[in-house]
Length: 339
Image (cartoon, rainbow, N blue to C red; front, side, top):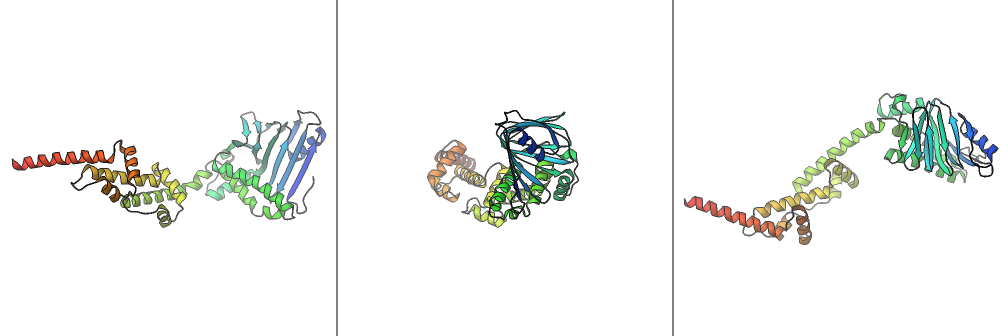
């Protein structure tokens, strides 16, 4: 297995049944009963290893095989990059699939079936270290029962773990080519362990985001109150987010999560509500244009379009109805005074 000068990167290329069997046995020391379904000339296995301070990461490409993996005192994480792997035990069966699901194996005898043209990453973390990381991140105690059997690679934590592992290989390979492979490994060990704890141990992600979500809710409520109080005035949401100490994107996400709409949508709803109130209670001097400007609209055509979509009638129709109501009420009031 050739190794680069600084020891950060190791590679193995094997072809044929005997060579591939030996390479698989070296890469998976706790596995046995390897079965290679293809002919000797078609059987191949490529393994690239990046060794961190206490984690070894593997990227494998294979023509396919199956094996039995014995239990170890560690958590084995598999992240498919192309194709899928079937991981089956007496209790469960899981298909780890690229872009969808990664597998997590813990203290069980499992059967692994890897099809042709599979490419994927895998690594092991000591069970004690994984649970310790979860404890350090949250202050809570966790047990092996809290370790999930799979990772949803479509969630943010699953996707970030996958990208971090995949990008690490690219960085190490590029730096190793100029003799600086060890630079990519600096500090990455803790990152991989922390990301694994968030992605694998149930409850860690939720605990870490609770405080941030409350904080975001406070920002959203503050923004709503400001919009309600200043809806008719010209202002920029970028300035509002800066006053709140968050980015415009964070404000958008927090507002939508709390109220189901964007800050801009809420602003226009407030302005349209104000305009409708004024059009339904007009004076003899009230015009649609004047109401639109007073309520913060600078484009009369855009105002009329938004108004129609919101209320099912044109602003001028609401104004005529408001004038009619006002006239009737005035007549009734006059008749009452005469009596």
